[in-house]
Each structure stands twice: as structure tokens, then as C-alpha cells.
Image (cartoon, rainbow, N blue to C red; front, side, top):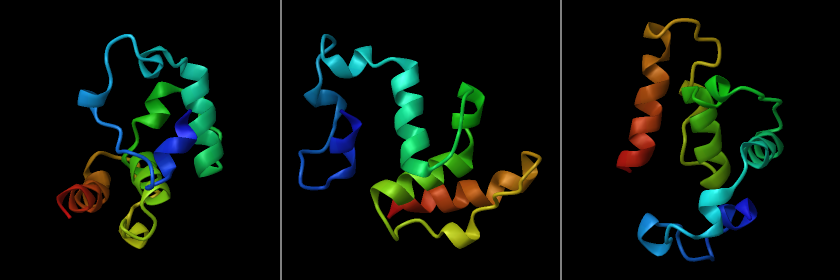
Length: 96
């Protein structure tokens, strides 16, 4: 199901194109984790880990290769202050 999100030849997935009974709304958490883990070659198991700005940057880079300046993403950030640069990178992706 999620493989179609990676292909740009398909129609973009927009909320307006999905009604509330669409199967997209009923995807299990384990299936989402499986897709993220296989796409990024990681082993995430908690929702909190998926909320990381680093994971979001990696997913955007997987979906749109070369758009995210991954060399500017701080993979070792321990505090909120250290993640600011990574959020700026992600913001620039959405603004481009």
C-alpha cells in the first residue's frame, strides 16, 4: 500500500482524494512501522521515535531524493535546541 507513495507517477495522495471509509484510514500501526523501518533501514518501535525531525527528513529524502540537504541534519541532537537546524532543513523542503 505505501509503496505507491514513493512513486511520482501515481496521483498525489491528498486528503481530498480519500473518504473516511478508505483503507488508508485503517492501516495498523505495525504496518506503518514496518514501512518506515524498511524504507529507512532502521528499527524504530516507539511512536516517539517516529516523531523525530531526523526521521521526517529521512522520509522526505526517500520520497524525493536529493531535495533534503541531509548533510545539514543533526543526527546526534540530544536537546530541543540542537534540533533547530534540522527543523530549518525540513522547513526549507516544504517551502521549496
